[in-house]
Length: 413
Image 1 (cartoon, rainbow, N blue to C red):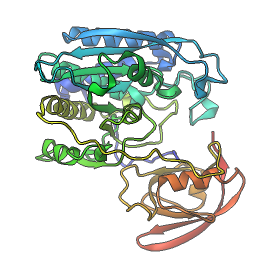
Image 2 (image 1 turned 90 degrees about the vertical axis):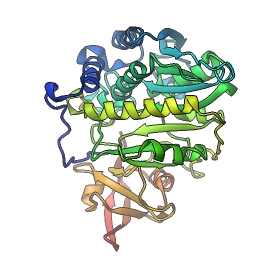
Image 3 (image 1 turned 45 degrees about the vertical axis):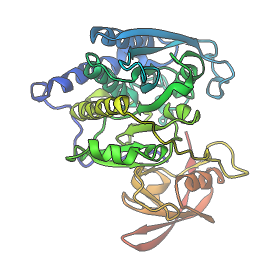
Image 4 (image 1 turned 30 degrees about the vertical axis):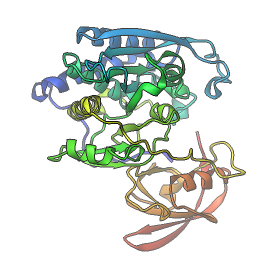
């Protein structure tokens, strides 16, 4: 469901002399992390090692206590079963800001971002014809890593009541392996000490000040806290959802702790070799970094506990397997449609079955074949229930008018 989004506004970094000092630092960071010389920061590459050393040095220059957490890629991890990556050594980068309160310093606020990406494409890439070309992963996730470094600089000289731990995770693209290692083997204190986890994954394409905060439903206090930090409005902040999702925060949510995932939404370069640094909004990354730094500071100094709100893990529909057929839409991840009433899309990929069906940005898909589409889970299940080459009717709403179009589903890369 990820496809080419035709942007209506340019996403350039802008002249460097017009950028704030924070945005200039972010620009320096993303240009290094997303350079071709880093080999797409794939696990097992020298480029990923250089990126890890760069992050460590950045934290150290800010005055933080920093260390590597070495681990090996499990050979039985589903994403590596048919690769040679099992047993490959890699590492998280961890910086600690010790708490100053005797009563609260044993509680931890984790702020994290993964710094690995897809290397030279192949598994996980959405442009299979580009295998062998560097996938720089500027937005995914040099942007979040640069924001994490800037948060470290912002908080380094401060003295929070609770301990703040900043973690650059490896192995996320292979199945949140670095965050899993951190949670199960390398937390500086037992997992029960976790107060909250904040995740920055793809924060590099801020458009119209629109920032998504997933996981706002994982603590009763989160909505009011986010609103207070966003007043006067710093962002068009869309805060919603549970703590599940395909990124590192879900590992922490599975331990029954509050999480938030900050995200500036999908785009057509996602998991493609075209995700390059010159398409990033570096001023926007700096703004997101300051907002999350303020949030981490607020959480680290709140006197009371957060009230955790659990949610069941989403389950695929019975009888479905694999990734199914391909339609070629980009879902609007902020929702905007009540659950059960469809999936709004923000674009379609050129030449895709969705384009052939006449779907455009803003349409709300309500059925695929005989499957009702109430939400993203329904849409995933509907596509998994079909094979490439199947002819289906796609039902959608546009400006309140129902549309029906027939298209032939394609093969997912």
